[in-house]
Image (cartoon, rainbow, N blue to C red; front, side, top):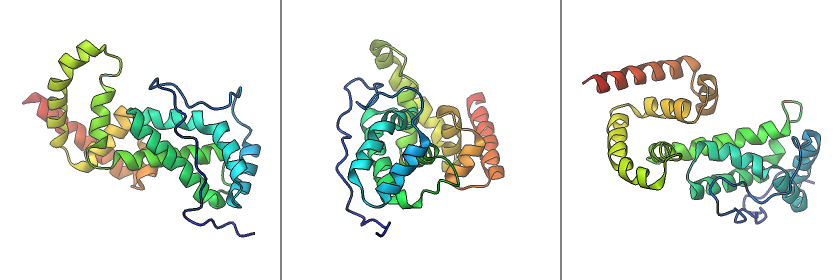
Length: 211
């Protein structure tokens, strides 16, 4: 049987089963410890052949973990749900590309989730909007309402002075907790270039704040 899937022949995923609390994981089967990577690899082999039942099983085993990966990078609930759905559609469509000799299955899926989140953040305005929201996550609503407008304006003014490349690198590292090496891999840009963008971006921000 061919491992190549038709682009539109993916199953309907239970993505809508998300709790109302923004930081609550998806309703998935509870499992103690990490999922069995051999089992996940076997599931991916079957998914590559179009097995929807195994896709559903893999979803329930891993969705809460991938949700956590996405939510650390995309703090708004609805966009995070969209990114998670895109992650699983990618897993469904590209399961035939998974190579168990090159790494474990869960790590492969984590990489897809991070790349989908980065793709969303790279869309105009998304990274800045995520950063503004993230700065007020631990503040009560009254305080956030008072402080957010002024803080948002200052943040936008500062970030708009940077190049898009500097802004992207700084947000991924200092807001989303990625290392420079991870940003280099995710953006497919040489590590030296990322280091240069970060260094120049920090210098530019310091100069702006000193004015």
